[in-house]
Image (cartoon, rainbow over all chains, first blue to last red; front, side, top):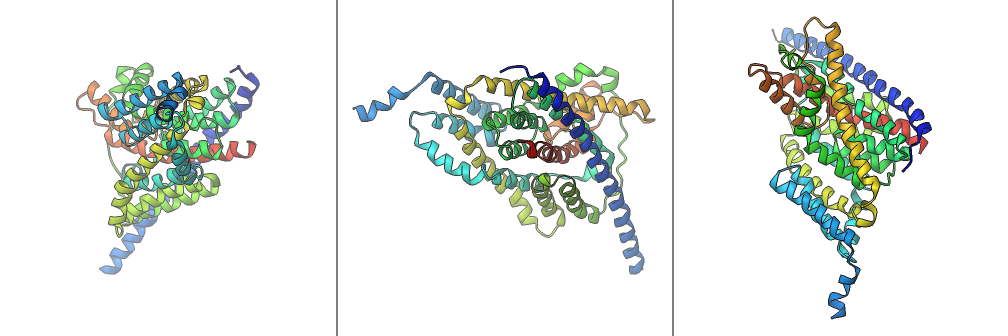
Length: 52
Length: 366
């Protein structure tokens, strides 16, 4: 097993892209959860009103 | 007599070492109750596969081709895991997903470290996924990338998952002050409707499939299990997935993986390297999560306990329990279990997405 500095430097790209990529995906999911919460609350409010 | 004792001539020292390794696994499973559903069959299979001219190898090879080579077992296991997870604490405070992302740092750091130590890119990526603290994801990625070290990676992944109560407190104490560990957090959960709980697994699967198509199977099966749980009309199936299916697949997986633990391929210096790199991945996951918590505290009005960042790994619910216990040990009135649980389930989602991203980035290059 030998030390491979050039492979290490090349892999730094994956480190940055991959880690930031997860943050981006998580950001999108967070936005979706907030959206879902609002949407479903409104849906339930409407259902409540129509029952009244 | 030669027919009866002929096999003894084929016995090697390496085989005996593998019996000892198998014995240690069985000991840890029974005596220490460390991941027993997996370590027990793995240890038993390891001993039998390292008998001279063992017929067990042929039988397990068939199971391996049927369930691991095609990634079927880890995916089926994900249905069970998905059915076990309550995403409630996460849905109540979606920001916790960011801790799940932060705590995947170890994966990408280890990818670079494994490359530095001369591992091929496919092996480096597979080793890095040990940091997901997620056995099925490790198996899935290692198999998809056709890594040469699947068995060592699986052993490392499950061993470190079981070692969370030892590794994480050590790492957290290394990078936090007592003051930080004592930070109290108010728990004010938002309202979660049933519609949100049902739509969440569908939406996450769709997003993950669009962003990283390779993660569609991983995320999809996990979220399908969760949908079974949350839909409310398939209680029997949900319970079956959580118990019977998950246990059965773990058992088959453990036995099957043992076929890759034959002395000639397992007792190589690379195995030790993989165990070391796996530990690095795990430690840097913890550091990543804790430092992200500290980073947030630079701007936040309401300080958060940076320890919950460490719970952003996939080892659920062990990690959140360990962190909650640490907080209580420092201050008996500090209750952060719900926040840690939220970060912990975020880690579940993040780890499978990380697996998908690694496949998307590395897959086309190998």
